[in-house]
Image (cartoon, rainbow, N blue to C red; front, side, top):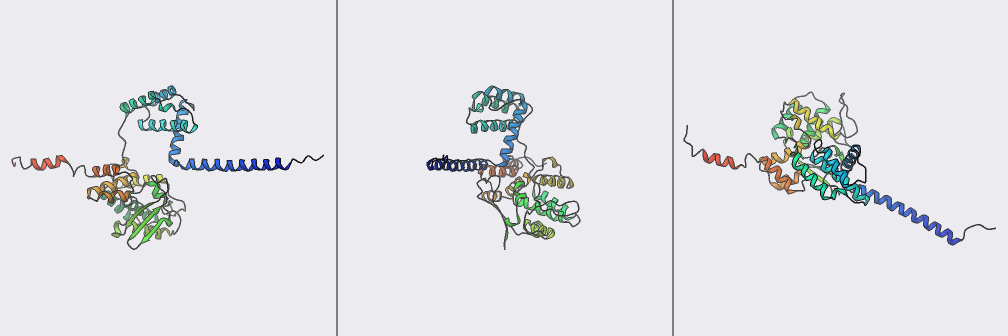
Length: 335
């Protein structure tokens, strides 16, 4: 007896298998693009927030009352901005699972607003490095015995400051990202923190006086390290050997604090990699550099952010009290 299935049944089975394969590929593509829609750092922050919520005793999905109890329990131990992040993570989880989001409840929002008003603190800002601070750091490094690390650190400090780079951008620079022109260096990165669509980032570093020129310092570092491909900024071990991997982002903060201590700065705890970006913008503002040039060099998307830096840099020179004091001196009898 012939038990071979009819041709129609075989064709149907093949079509079903093909449909399943297509559905699987579409599902994988969807998962890939959904992941790409959120940056790795944001995803890590959300995962950490969810872990803390679950460690406290929360379970997902959750409800309004549980979220409120969580806020009350952590209101005094966590910064209000951290709690806001936790709420966002919980909200996003419910949103993408297609279930009711308890964070949208008016009671949760009102409770969080009360916590902000009661426990809110000004955001801690990195110390803005001034030109004189950069000069002290570079002078200190130049006085050290010649080494590969010395050349790397000089290049890193000058590039970080004059390029207004974030630490993630500095460590991401590849030799292939360097575009040398007769007038200087253009660094082109395919992606940055605020450029998640990968339209690209460019920083122009014109040639200047060799003692303070980041482009010249980069050349000196590359020659010293004998590198012509791969990551630009790399670790240098205690034997002054250059490793092939990129520098860890945290090493930039460590370097700044080490240099700050060596230069006897009184603001070492306030130093971080963001001191480069704040420093470039506020220093340029004090020198009356045009708004558009400051915005372009730092790659800022928001005009408001740039104006905030300009106001910070000029808060003592563009000051109503200064104008009035100059007027007052003409009214006071000379001593």
